[in-house]
Length: 516
Image (spheres, rainbow, N blue to C red):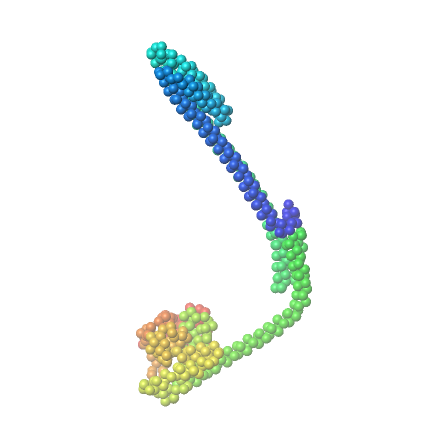
């Protein structure tokens, strides 16, 4: 059967399931309709037969009451029309008995037949008593009374037989219902079995069709994957597979196989040329990388040199900008900035005071406190540095322009030159502010002595949330050992290990310089 399915067209395979499903539904619907109509007919016929028999039985009871009255009334009053009326009633009673006797509802039941025979015999006896009643009543009142009692007794027995018949009718009705329920159970069982067989057949057919399609698709997939392996140089040749059958999958597979043959030949012919191109591209790429690295190194050198020039004009050592750069790198990494952005801040930080080039020496190097006019001039270095750098498209110089512009802004908005507040200040400016202040307070300047460490830390705790970003301040204070270790290495001219501050802060030896 699998070979037969393989040789079918794909459209036919996919429609087999639909056809079987449709046929199954039609057959199940027709069978359910026929069975339902049969049971409805049986139930309706049973109900009509029962109603007909009960109606005839009830009619006999009513007629018996009428004949009782007519017979006794005639015996007492000698009604002339008694005979005609009584014959009519007897005729109706006989007709109703015939209706009951010929009913299909009771026809096959021997007990019911026996009850009907008893009723007919008792009615016959009733007629005999009724015909002699007038003479008995007229001849002797005592005999007449006994005759009336005998007539009533006969009537009562007929009613009792009719009551027995009605009970028998109820019993037959219950038996018929039980029989119908049993038949319905058998029919339901047959229907479920039939539909189950159809479903199993449908599932089996579906499985065969799906298995056929998947197996052929899997072969096609293997050939296509082998071609991609050839493209990725994982194998040297393609696994060519011939699809049997005449369906659409086989036709598509043949087309793909032919194209793969052609593509394989072209690929093998061009692979040598491609390798040569890749080699040239690799050489050009490496040359571009070297050139880019050289440009970046040149930028860093220019930035550092310009920063050094600004620091030397203010009589500060070059170590200041080195320390500020390292502190900025450490704090940026602690804050969670990426390695690339952290290094950008480090490389740009030497330019944070580049604007001091425009400040006169007598103000820049004044050993005492600035006057208000001098301080106003001094504050212009932030905006001057920004204007010097803002037009550059280089990432380092753009970052340096931000640092120059905002490293004197305060978290509480009381800084300069723009009075920015909180997160309005760029993260670069907030980081460099802490690094610059920490190093400036700990270094000797022309206008002050170096502060001891405890005094510096007290200032940071006091200015947390005022001058400095509170989050950055906490990071700085909680990781002070890294900043002190970096300071010591710079001052001892040791080579800074970036991994100590970038990859794993726990590798830095704990160093806290105690000062009184």
